[in-house]
Length: 107
Image 1 (tube, rainbow, N blue to C red):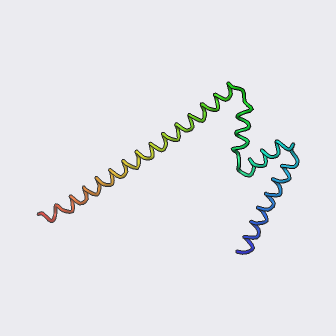
Image 2: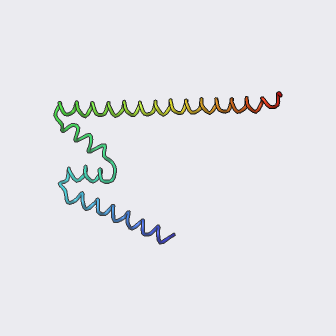
């Protein structure tokens, strides 16, 4: 177990060193954005790229973001509706089962 931990630690360390070397190979401004993006911090690069676009392209990005947010809201609503329907179905099945189990006792 300790050996597996050490192996993964070495792999992580190698990745960090690789990203650092990548940052130094590129021009300073580009290296900072690419390095952060490779490590998973894409907001800075995304923001800079957005401001570098012309006005027409910016509206396309804004439209895409609004479509993505709308699709996300629709998916959340669909999941909520499906969950509500599942609960209603389970309640109906439970009521039917209780009704059927009560009938033989009444006879």
